[in-house]
Length: 183
Image (tube, rainbow, N blue to C red; front, top):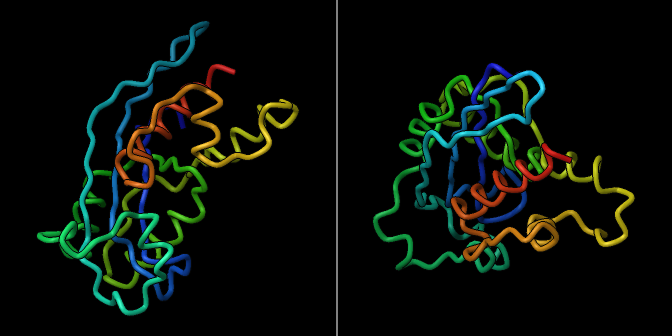
């Protein structure tokens, strides 16, 4: 696992069910890991990418999810198609290990969409979840009762000015990961 790049992935969706809802915002923060004996690992930013995706079936969207994601018709003017976004996503994440906050959610949507549009997922098969990592190291910390990205950013003093936009959350998750890795 130490030989692969990491890709911090975040998506925003039109709801919680990957079978009926859609990805409308996606981001990748690609990082190279360097491990030296006796030292803390180093994580160097290689690339960042994000895009908004035009929903194909907005009628099935959950209004609360749209509100959380900040979706507006005018804000998504010029957004790309899901196929174009997933094709670029596959290129940006090729060979890397996916890291996400609640990785099962993001991976579930991505796996479903990539299968639906017959786009090969070229990421490494390992996946890392920062919720699980945080729970493993902070479970006995009295100041931590919730493990949302917002709460953990608050606990660690990580600034996330544009929460619930995919790129801001992917960046915040990378910062959280670095904090957790030295604990």
